[in-house]
Image (cartoon, rainbow over all chains, first blue to last red; front, side):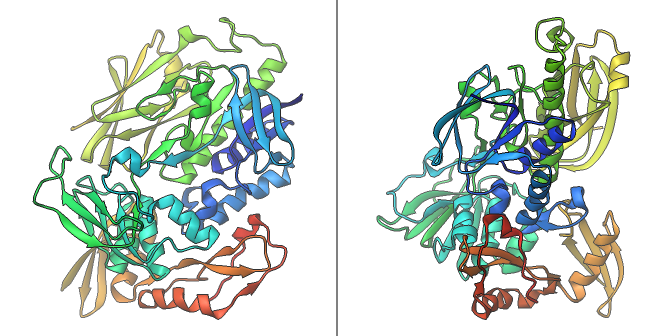
Length: 431
Length: 109
């Protein structure tokens, strides 16, 4: 049975950054398991630029950003297997995987880093009525087909969903000669970056219809058109507002869902708000030695923050392995982990969730980043952080939106000063 | 005096800019939170440009397409022309291309 100190599930930006960080902390035997034919994850199909502004102070394309990390993995001679699918992970970290050369095999991991990324919500999940004609794709599938496989999904396109993927594909399809007639968005605001509205829609005169949705797909064998309707405050289609658009392709950009089948089946406790695992300050799940980072933990907007988060997971997985090797078992049986010391992070008043959900100040790094998302658009509001009932931070934010992940920082020294701290609340305040 | 409102696209922040012009010459840019915003605001109302990213077909390699981008930003009205031209210009004969080399860039312009 092969054994590795750290087994990383996924060779995209999260898996790569975690591997590099763990190696730099002195861990020798690391293995990345990647199901696609190359490392890089979703970045390989994201040929547009805008990646890496925070990390490298440059605007890179997805493949360029991925290569910066792939190079580092190769320079450090970190092992990886491609076209290898992980089928199962047991709670005691036995990984079952398969590929064409070895068939089915198992690997024992000292620690596991979950970095599987996310998948797209599909038409079935939206219950759009109609026949099932060819020509309905998720935006990401269309992106893969166009950018990597070299196929055009269609020529006359309607896009549902104005998240970044939908906006990026509106531009991409147009540049490849398709006609994108309209982008429909259910909410009264777009989920994507404002820059993408400008450079993907405005630049090409593609109309954006907010508060609209697709109520019918027409066509039997191939899409012939879609029917859009305006929706009310309850997001229900308003009868009488239907408009038909002829097209041969419908692209759906309607949500990303962290891919946590492996996590759930091994008993990892999930956060229903993020659809990702609940983690502590070390990005460790309820299962000792099992860490999570990147889109599998919560869907990110900027890959730079994925890399940052994954580096922390990698460092902590390394720390876990080193502590286990030195036989340092904690007071409560788990290596160094003491649940009675955990402080609960409570998202309130506009804050939908936090990552992490608990913090043990004795185990955190000097500075802890807490990431969160808000549930609506907020202008000229403040982010309030409370240690029990005492407000310790009050930061003004001119604009906050659901589509833009936010963060606050907590200092270990300050937390240690508060004895018996039970609860940290993060909320949005008017003044 | 003319005033134009636009969103800066230099980085993911998307700061709302106000650009003032006098006889077609930019006199003031406000709303930016960094120098790049000022540069963008000035350029966008006088000579808008974009960096264009796309893919080209590969012959003889292990992948069918490679991603490309313009070496520098090009005039906005030339964007679609560039995207079309490059597909006729060259079929790259790239032997021994591995997937990792999707990062290989042809700077075409």
